[in-house]
Amino acid sequence: MTHTLIDNSKDVELSTFYIGDTICGIDILNIQEINKHLEFTSVPHSSDDIKGILNLRGKIVTIFDLGKRLGLNTARIGKNSKNIIVNSGDEHIGFLIDEICDVVKANRNDIEPAPSNMGGVKGKFFKGVLKTEEQLVGILDIDVVLEES
Image (cartoon, rainbow, N blue to C red):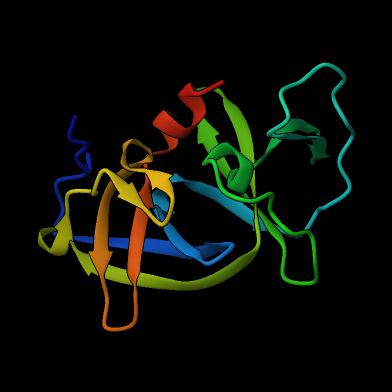
């Protein structure tokens, strides 16, 4: 199954971040905000990839451990940890990540189909990959990541 980027414009801006040694990106148009709120309220009987919930300016946000969600190691909570808050339908969802990186601007024509496995993560979680001079960035398909509930 091939995932395509929906927007028809030529360029995309990706917020890039680390989950362990894997670098991923999300189209900045899908991001509500990036924050450092790391005090979660646990949710009894939830799946082990849910870190908890937090109240963000009156809205309840479910925070997922993105590393665990993708089948990698649990995200490390440290001085560089952040939550990437995205819109999913009519709710906000947060992904706990290890470290935020740069915003990378790319031409959509430079984005290639995702391999079946990238850094230990199944290719189905990615819309595609971008090869930069330094690294290979997996572009997350938020909808597919959240389908795995």
